[in-house]
Image (cartoon, rainbow over all chains, first blue to last red; front, side, top):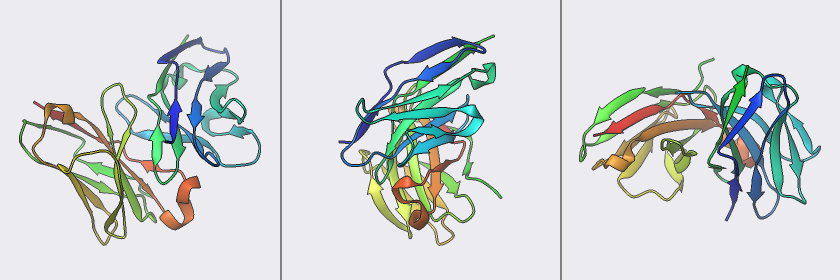
Length: 110
Length: 116
């Protein structure tokens, strides 16, 4: 069965520092991987996706993600965190539907 | 260009009642998916509608049903509400033929259902 795992419930980082939110996946065949962000009491917003090609994918708001086939990972990264990045982040794999991880709450402190 | 719109935004029901949630997809989209997001959890896939038919279904009981109209809008109905049905219900739209497995979904802001 296709699935994604987000091993960290929460990630804390100081503003200006780099951030990483981890995601590992389990799929048969080529993985179609996504990151979404959810701000309080809001729906999900698309950040970026990996379909094929370069392992480093650039997305919205300065975020990027690194696809690593050997480690079956798709970690979300940003070189310099902002307080406004504080939100809930979901990794997802898509077959005929999106399957989400449990989410990681990112807290960026001033 | 309007995005995905959902109504109502909040509602409160009691156990045993029935609820209908509504969704209008993003302009140009023809496929609607519904997700349930319980507090502190990731969204769980309920079902997907395309061409007015249910195409895919997640692991949800028959109390959860839906409909898609000719204008691509959709309804989610839940009968015999249970306390555990309290959640944020998210609608997502896409254009099936262009999207497929590589296309991203566009989400509405959700309908928060509280069952007392």
